[in-house]
Image (tube, rainbow, N blue to C red; front, top):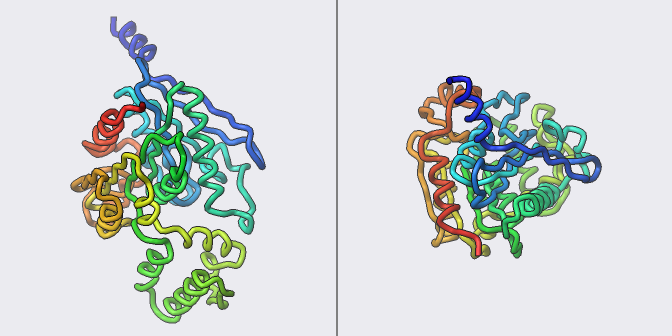
Length: 310
């Protein structure tokens, strides 16, 4: 009897279907997860910074929390299908990397739009929601501009200020001469002038080959983009997020007064329950068995289902 129940549970569970797109310089791969019952909506989960895979993991950076997989599974249980994909250079898309000196922020935007179109085609829904996490929220904001294929935006742990401003805040705590050198590079990139040479200790992050990408990233203002978007928006952040501040949430809330704002108490950047203590907070980044914090899936699914596509 137990075996029969177990088999029935598997048969009635969400269905994962591989997505293999024909893209340049090589195919892009992802996963469509559809509910066991009716698909009431579909969303694309857009990853944050770094070589992040479709589950939300960056093993080389010590992040194996699987937040996107857990979110997708939770949404499927509530009737929301999802498409999630490895970023270029990560997971099954490691061969799809664009040469660093050729990479621009719009390349990530183009991928998000392509997978949104894929989600619509495969599910038959009239539009797709964009769920952007961390830097993926900015990708979602750009991808949604003048795009009728987008139902609305779900911004999880988003930055609310231009990237150069965030980096200045981070480097503001560095000792000299590194702080001054970093500020000089940031100033030059924003001004469109040639950045000065930096100490070897900073060279890994400030190298000529990555400057074109940084310029394309720095030119984007999350608050201005959100103000220009007129669809439904949910913005959420955990109170123990050590990567994105409450000020970022406030900036986006001010830019889009009609957005729904959610503050998850005691939730960190990877959407898990975690304390403010830095070591304990980061430990949650390395625990895929830790579930998403209570409320995360319900808040996202609830907002999506409250705004049915026309």
